[in-house]
Image (tube, rainbow, N blue to C red; front, side, top):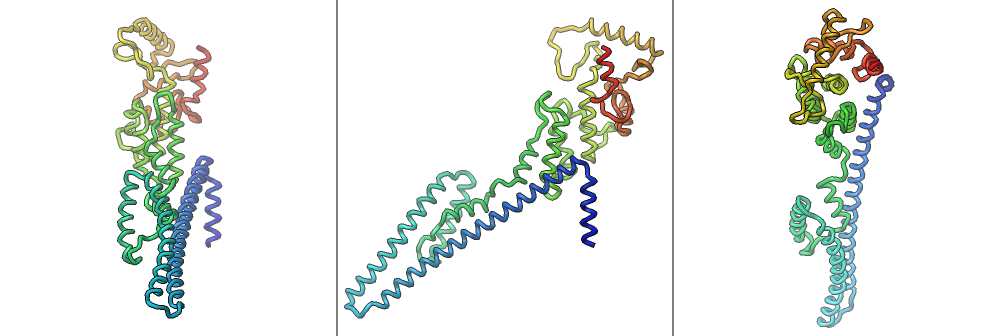
Length: 349
């Protein structure tokens, strides 16, 4: 049964779209890296604990050896015995004191680089270490650099790929107008969502809201809702619609405004500039088109309709979007950016 499920998973993976396979590979790689880093953190912490126990055992052994040597001393006068005891204690304390000074110097050097929450965390941890002096007979516990490192990583983490991907995803924007296309913005969004994976990634509604917030201002009102005014519930539908609208706006000519002045997508008319001649020429051209096509608003050439996406009604736009047809020639098999009718028209002009 397990072999059958595994074979089914392999077949499903082979039938996936190449983009989906790439996204799945990125997600698996990120998950494997995260698990490896967690394992490395655990190993470092265990090494630090083992080193600390070995140091405590070495200190206990040194004390035991000193006591054993004192017990082995011959019966001497009390003054000589006390002098020998003091000498042993001084040598032992000197060795331990030197070790603590060296470790404290390293610790203070590392702590000097801390600030903010990291400094607050370590100050509170030092308070706990001082409280443990009672357990160690009033002696300050020995702190190794490995212990310091593991403690800070356990509290604040290392370079976690999931956290890094979330930061990039939350700050993702389409960029300034003309600097990044809608297709590039979509690819960047889908790559980060795939990197986060289904367990750590955003929900469907989160993806929709973040995608709409990330497009630049010229697109936000156009993709805020569906054509019928309802809310988006599918991220894939929102992406498909946004790409279609972006291409139509970029490629289709701008319609004239009520004042007769043409409106462009990414250029603003300078104050005082007039376009009466241009408006007049467009008006004459429209009249000629209507005469040739029998009054058709869109006009025709060689029997092929020449549509303008901006002049469509909401019902027409929705119908084309549902049928996955080109916004310019209303045919299947391509988007507006690849429309052969538009390319042919450019060559003829």
